Length: 361
Image (cartoon, rainbow, N blue to C red; front, side):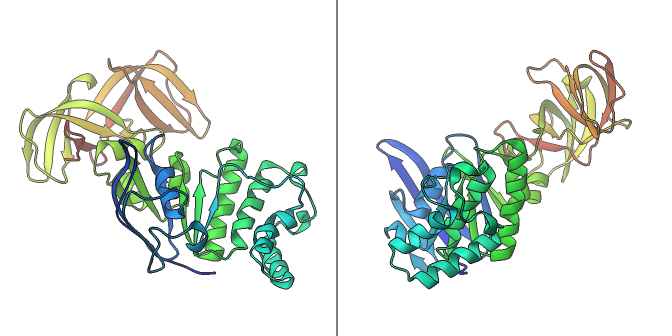
């Protein structure tokens, strides 16, 4: 198998007067597994299609393996794409579905057979080679679609939400199989999803997109622990981060103390990152659901509206007088029921501050 670096420089795409991709610069290293994430309409699938050649760029350059492929035909780019739809030929067997593309491009019979059987071995499809798609599960069909890409020996694999049509259990299974596939092949892989859990578990590097712009690039834990802005902080993590209005009461280099009116005016000293906020400045404090303590200096009380008991952990949804309830994760069984008052404390070491412009403070 090949590996190839993918380089995008000021890539733009417009449909008429609508700018969909707005100047993306990105380096994807040899053998890296990169995941594009973002809300619907952010441009992640369009960006993938620009890399594949299925859409023409408006301006900029795309390099794959050191070659400028900005205006090269898709078949000449050395990429293979796996779509959300399996798009298998229903009248063909698994073997013939995987071999069809190679036969159409003139590969000899022995080469075709070797490639198909090697892909079938990697994907554990050997016993299914004589089956037709109608006699297979959704997960098995998606493995055939991936196998059809493997036999082409591509430089880069492109996945466009390949698990969206599968049920929850199959999604987990296929996620593990795709991760194993990357470990076995070591190819460069680019994967599009709106599911941040897939992104966190699969990616070497995550690219967070919003409205055609790259908001942040980094490893899953870098984005989780050190987001650049409130959009990334809220998008990465499930359940999402809580954002609560706060007022700066004092600040020095690298730290600020804020008062949170909706949490009984509790005061919290938070480490700052990019700047020192002014006293009296209106900010937002970011608190992940798992970053609350049962006791502590920055304590508060609030009534619960709903308690979700999941066995290994619990989620409390607290009414703090805002449109969105405060979400709190606790290990094990929750000690309160719906409607009861929860007594908690904020973990100041884990709190983050964001300005009203959304940027990290």
